[in-house]
Every structure is written in structure tokens, then in C-alpha cells.
Length: 160
Image (cartoon, rainbow, N blue to C red; front, side, top):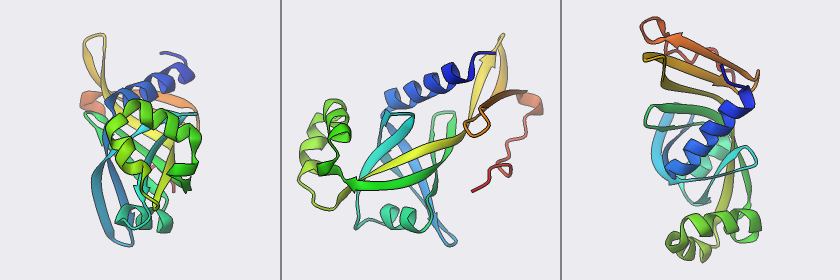
């Protein structure tokens, strides 16, 4: 199997290329999901949101969150950064990737950058023409493959 850093880098590139992903957040017993436009840098997945929105408030209360797109699921921990208008690195990358939305969001005085550090990712893949569930554990830096017919699609091993 490939080197951990190469696999993680490939996954982050795939996420960055995707552009929009579903973000799930929760507060108490209430889970919500919505589409966010993301950028990837420094091994983190970042997006911006208004401090007036539910996802911001949920992430303040519970920084554990999840992304999904296609056959990829990622669990991570969010960190609320400063205002998007003051984060030059985020602005530069976001403006290049999303020029029109950047103009709209750049005017917002409540827009904050949220950076998510991936903990674990699971994705369906094929090796030697056979389907597998690949787990990429960023905490332990381990990669595992389970044959599709034997895969246990559980997440109970993920600790907050």
C-alpha cells in the first residue's frame, strides 16, 4: 500500500478538486447538514461562514463535524479562526477558486474562517478490480483496506 503521507495528500487534493462538500454539524441531539464551498491548505479543510448561522453556533458548542461527497466520508475537528476579511491566506486561495462568491462574502462583517483538521476518512475504492473500504486514520497515521463483503461501516472507533 502507498505511503500514508501520499495517500492523505491525494485525498486532500481530491477534496480540494471537489470544491463543494456536505458538512454535518450537531448541537445536543440536533444534527444538520448543508453544502459548503471549501479550500484545502496546510493539511486542513477550510470554509467561511457567518457567525449568525446555525453551523457556526453548532461548531462553537461542538467542534466535531463531518464532510461527505461521493464515496468519501471525513470526520474532523473544527477550529473557528478570525474574520475571513482579515485572513489573507484564506482570502487569496478562496478568491482564486471562487471569484464571484468571494466578492459577495468579502463584504460580510460576520464571516469567519473555519478550519477543519481531518481525523479519519473512509472511502470506497478498488484494488485489483475488487471493491474495498479504505480507512485513513490521520491520528495514528495508519491506512487499512477491508474487502467490501467483509467491511464493517462503523464509526464507533472514532473518539471526539
